[in-house]
Length: 253
Image 1 (tube, rainbow, N blue to C red):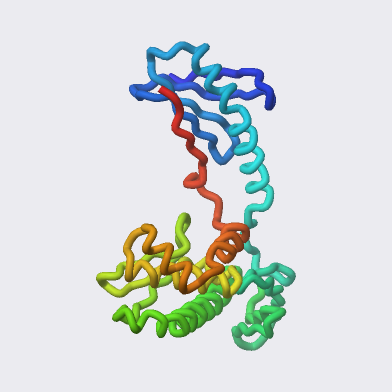
Image 2: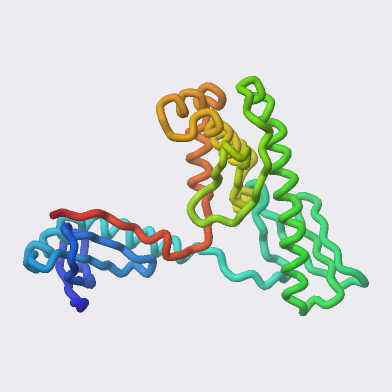
C-alpha cells in the first residue's frame, strides 16, 4: 500500500509516495514527472523516513528542477514541414518542403531540401528524411572508423564491422571477439570530435575490455583531449525521454 506524505524542508515543501516493502534500506527515486517515491522497510518509523527526506532535500530539489528543464526542452514530435530543424554533426539543418513530380531529398549543408509529390503524406516524408539521415550516418561512421583504424593495426586489432542502432543509454558498445563496434544513431547529431571520441573509446576496448587504469592510459595517450570531447558529448546529449532516466538514490539502513 502506498501512502502519500509531505514534509517541509529547507529546500521547500516535498510531497512523496511512501511504500513499505521487504527491503533492507530506505530508497529514494525521483521520477521523470518530478514525483518522489520512497520504499522503506516495514519496521522503520515514519519519523525516520521524514528525517531521511530532509537530509536528501537538496538532492531532491535539484533533481526535480533538472527533470522540469528536460521536459521543457525535450524534442517535440516531427511534422516534416518547412522550418523544422534536424541536427547533423553539431549543426542545424533547416527543412524546406516543396511539391514536385518525384520524391527527392538533398542538402547543401544549411538546408535539407525535401521534394515530394504529396506534401500531406507524412509517412513518405518521414521515410525520405530517415533514409537520407541513415545514409549520412553510415557514411560518417564508416569514415571515422577508416580514419582511426590505422592507429590500432599495429596492435593486431581486426578491422571491425559497424552496426548502427538507436540506444537510450549508451553512445557505443563493442564485441572485440567478433570484431563488432555498435554506434548509437544519435551520434550523428553530435560534432565530429565527439564521434571520434566514441569510436576511439570502443577501439581501446579491443585492447582492454574494461575501464581499468590501462584502458584510460591508452585512451589518454591516443586522444589527450578525450575528457573535453566527452564533456561536449554529454552536454549536447538529447536522447528521447524515457523512464530509464529516472534518478535513483540508494538510501540508508
